[in-house]
Length: 190
Ligand SMILES: [Fe+2]
Ligand SMILES: [Fe+2]
Image 1 (cartoon, rainbow, N blue to C red):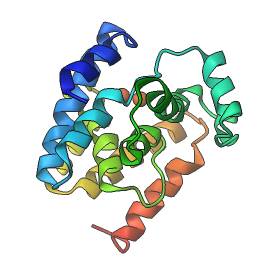
Image 2 (cartoon, rainbow, N blue to C red):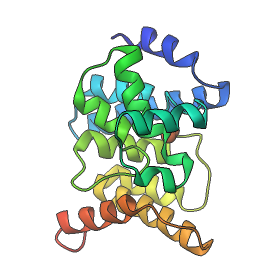
Image 3 (cartoon, protein in one colour):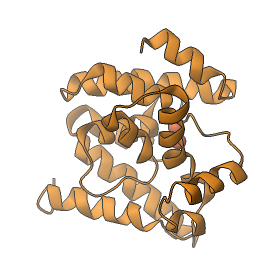
């Protein structure tokens, strides 16, 4: 699918603000794909569709999670997590994208997962550091992403985990598993 066509489809699903975010993720994902030798076209498409389900109602997302037998763990955690797996499902069924690597990058862009693929890491990090993002710690992740994608991933996961812990909020187990997995991949340190 060509970029213009994909953007037209996704624009209808998003607010203007979220569409601008999506363009930022797309540009960032393309840069990272070139830097780390990933398929640029796949990175572009995964980025364009990563937030496809962001504005679906909670009721619709909940029903899809139940009907499609997605992890029931999702339902007891923050609803912000839902649009990622539901998005992967809808991008397949409504848009017709069948590439499982692209769908997985959408599916795991919020929680991460153990043993993430390069494409999944690129979308996760691009979502975190795209130019429109402004929050404490983002610059450190941007700098890390220029040299070492895993380091950027560790910093972004650490920020997320610490942000939640400081507010006494629950941390989704997959996020902790992702953090440990990247540390293990790098044999305990980078
Ligand atoms: Fe998202
Ligand atoms: Fe996003």
